[in-house]
Length: 576
Image (tube, rainbow, N blue to C red; front, side):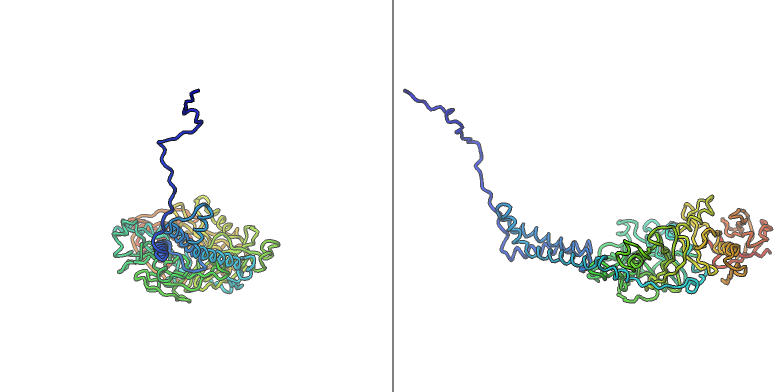
């Protein structure tokens, strides 16, 4: 019997001679010695940290949330470097875990310690446990409105809000041919009290990065002062430009300049101000967290940075010319804590006895040498009425509460807009003034172009008493008349004591136009040699205004508060 071997009988015994031989993965070798690897890891981490610090500028402070993110990121960078330089040694999941744990022991424990610190610090500052401390952040002193709030003079009433000031500032820059192509007006528009008058100040900024390169050696050449009473815009040109601003880059950027000089300090947003000599400064309030690690935000003094030279100094009590150490948002938040928690945390949720909050809006007013924040106070249950208001000094945080029940601000704004609804004017957020010992909302009325056209006064207690006028004097006169008609003041209080210095201008009338505003006839005069109408004569102030004719030579008498944006309101006339 003959047996023959057939390969098919091997039943799967096959050899693929084209298959590549299987190679075992060799572990990567670590780089150098252990000390060398640690040095490389540390160097890379420090380099990354330096770049991140230069760009992001975190405060090196346990009270700053960004500090924890910074340290966690450095720990992560170190761990990645350690894994790379050590060769990713280890077999399987368990092996790699042991390897990673060995290489990242120090970063792991550092991160764990920071997490524990943050959690404990957050719990110790929890408002549920520390409600008494939160309500004590702001000391509120009850005061009497008519006793402590004097009747303010016209040259102290700010008649422009920020939006209107921005319009005027942009228009003024457009008139400056040597600047408009290279610079823009910054959006700061800080309200300050300058030489006893309320003004808004704002610096210029570079139009773009290319224009920064072209002009950085000279710096920003000017800043603007907008008078909030006369609406006059002044461009203050600087002999030496501002080289330390928020519009700068690299080392001259204000934020970076501050951080490298004060690496551990936390700051509020810098505020642009000028001193009484007109020198521009940045007021950088020092922020502190006083409850636990992250709660109880408050300010403690400020660093003043000279915008021209970059010189800086910390003042625990800033000089008197500084107006903004405590921001409006900070004061409002602290009052809300006071109003919510002065009877305990649980009362703010259950029962809500005497729980109050600030209204949705605020404004500023100059009093003496300081700027005060004004905002209304209402019940936590919104009922469109105020129980009072606060005035808070933004330099010292001294806060007074005035119990004046009446309409809340937006109801008063609606009442004022209702008086001129045919003109579609919009009211600014009101100020609260003392007019004839009556708490009174005062607001400007603006057109669609955000320009002030009229003024309105609304009685707080009886907000159906609304008066308007083309000038502040006219508005107040109409308002006092309405108060007398409603029996709130005597007839002897209707007149206005206008003690402001009187001025005169003269000219020959070239053209007269008339318009009826709020029922009063107004005569607009253009003098010979002038292209625009520069004087307005109201018939209710000057009864013989209808007798004026083209060709008359007149002397116009006016006071400081009769100067408007477009024309002078004559308080009297002489015809020669």
